[in-house]
Length: 176
Ligand code: S3P
Image (cartoon, rainbow, N blue to C red):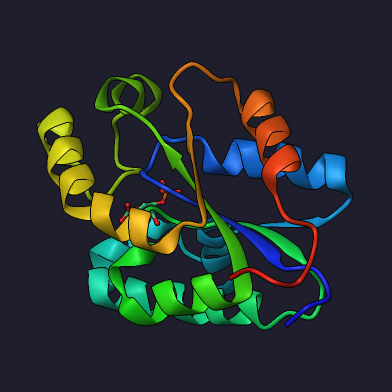
């Protein structure tokens, strides 16, 4: 375990993990990793291209491997996880063990407002709102089981989310 735990942000696509994580890392002087961006950089393709060419399971393998790399880093990191990181039990266990995990919980209205449709969200089809509801319902228990804390982000700007995390994040190794 690093001397300070990593901070991992989880939650649905559009919940603001990347922006809040970036702010937090800036103000804490820590390295920020966006898991999706790290996968894209490593494999030289966008997440959408990976989904299209290789399928979701292969993407989940890449995601798991990228998460493993982050969680075993000796340097404390602020990690923004893709919304589906909680689907694998191994990821959930690793996150609980190695990071202080915060669920950025948003209503479907907020998610819908923040998500621009297009080909950058491979899990959203012709009816993105219905897809968001279905995915969010299916994952709520997994986010809850993985998170050490929850922040309801509907009325908060990313910078305010980062400020809240700063105040509740335990800056010490013990997580349990
Ligand atoms: C996914 C969320 C995306 C990305 C991929 C799958 C998901 O990340 O990992 O499209 O399963 O919810 P963001 O949550 O950062 O948008």
